[in-house]
Amino acid sequence: MNDIGLSSFFLFEDISKIRFFIYNNIRDIEKYTKYLSLIFINYNYILVETANPNLVTLYKSLNLININNTFFVFHHCEYLKEISKYITLRKKQKWSLGNFTNWIQVNPHYFGKVFKNKKNKNKITRFFITSTIGRNYDYLISAIESIKEEGLQFQIIVVGKWNTFTEYNISDKVKDYFTFKYNIPYSELFDEVNNSDFIIINLDPLNLNDNAFKTTRVTGSAQLVYGFLKPAIINEKFASIYNLNSYNSFIYKNSNFKDIMRNAILQKNKYYQLMKDNLAKSADYIYKVSLENVNNCMNK
Image (cartoon, rainbow, N blue to C red):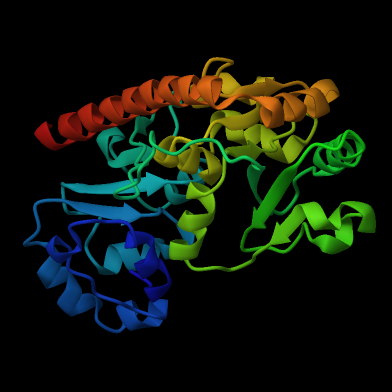
């Protein structure tokens, strides 16, 4: 794995059972494909994270295509069409994070030892959101400008690889409500998630680019929702796809985002804990389905 991913094991309590082999550039692997392929054949299973059509030649050089127990995780299911031009994958080899037609769902949302159910709602409500290319943040900005006038206390934590949503997108009168953090290590990211109350997933049904998150892609924010048991704030058009509903999250329409956000701020800890308990049931269900699918693929 790339060294950037090392900190993703920040909360993993049994790190001694994992052996890491680090590379900083894909060429580091390409130089040693002959030797690596001889090593790979000794493994019972190989999991490729994540399938990328630009790496088909590398997969072939590593002999991964001919090893029966190689599984490919597709974060972009649309990549299959391009990959299929060069290699043929059996159904059991095609894994997806989502429950999509003709795909094996394997959703890993275990981040390590997280004290999920013990954490109470903050006195000052903290919202977590990721800055992502092509997303619509207008609903969020408009809601905050309106809620500010009501004197409610809250904070917005913004993280992400892309600084497409920054302090320059918002007016001076609401800047104090935002904290922007970009390209932070996973260890710091997990701390920010764990210290937040809600995760805003701003998928917009009116945004054509977001429609892929219904059929071929899964937002990474959903993994954080499941793994840290942080109720989501998500549009009704996407909620059911992620096993989210009014019992475990806050569901909004584009027209009432402000009202839903206000409800989240005013929610009492008693009802917040009930929402988290319901979310835990949904996360456990997804985990069990995923584990069963993994076992079925292995047994085949």
